[in-house]
Amino acid sequence: MKKIRFAHLSDTHICKDYSGNQMKDLFEKAGSPGANLEKCLKELERKQLDFVLISGDLVHEGTSEDYRYLNEMVCSCMPTTHVIYVLGNHDRKQAFRAGLQMEPAESSLYYAKEINGLRIIVLDSAVEGKESGYISEEQTEWLEGVLKEKAPRGSIITFHHPVEWEVKELGMQITNRLWDALKNSDVLGIFCGHTHANSLNYLEHIPQITADSMAFGLGIEGAMLSFTDKTGYCLCEINDGRLQVHYETSTPKPAAYVTFELAALQKALQ
Ligand SMILES: [Fe+2]
Image 1 (cartoon, rainbow, N blue to C red):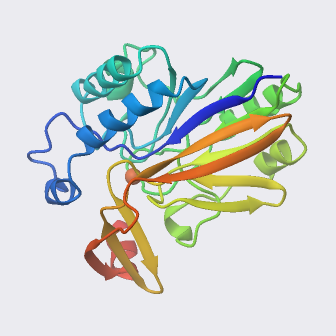
Image 2: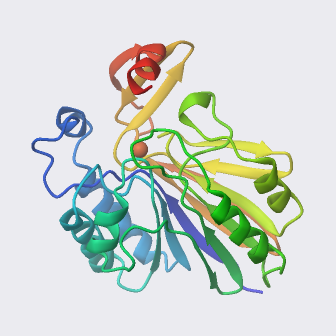
């Protein structure tokens, strides 16, 4: 059976114009998120992947115009590759739906889609106005129904906030009910973003993969947090129910340009 090949990108933080944005300096120091992304998407199109998923923080607190700008970039750079968008804490649901002309304007965004026998389950862990994540009971109930039936080549789940992360206050706790739905299912992996750093953790037997950001990196060392110029993504394969993930880093020697105490950030975000 043919391998399923896909890319996992995250935290693109695209804006058509960053002027007036609180984090303008940071994005400028990190280079140009739009140019980095465009280059990456063109490379991915040449790989003829089954799909590309972007696990949230698509746009940095932008408008419907920014989502249109992102989607036009994606469609022109990858005209033959299917893209799956996930929402993060810096996304704005209404602007996303208006930009991509989806309805209704304010409902949360979760669905399942099968591509070449693999079921991709998108959940919405973003709660507007909050840095940390939450998956609603409504989504959990829907997910229980979906996972009752197995997909021909298994399932993957994607949502923005990781369950396993050292900065627990900014991540996400899942309910026992959600874990009960996941643990005996055909889910081969959970794909998240938010950390701006690639990592692999396990929720018992299920791998949780976080991708680097396509805009800027975050490095945590002890009590200190650094913003860095590191960007990257994951190339993934599923073959006979086995998942392989390769981390592709575009900056092999990342440099930090701002470092401060992690506790200060946690306090500021409370
Ligand atoms: Fe982000």
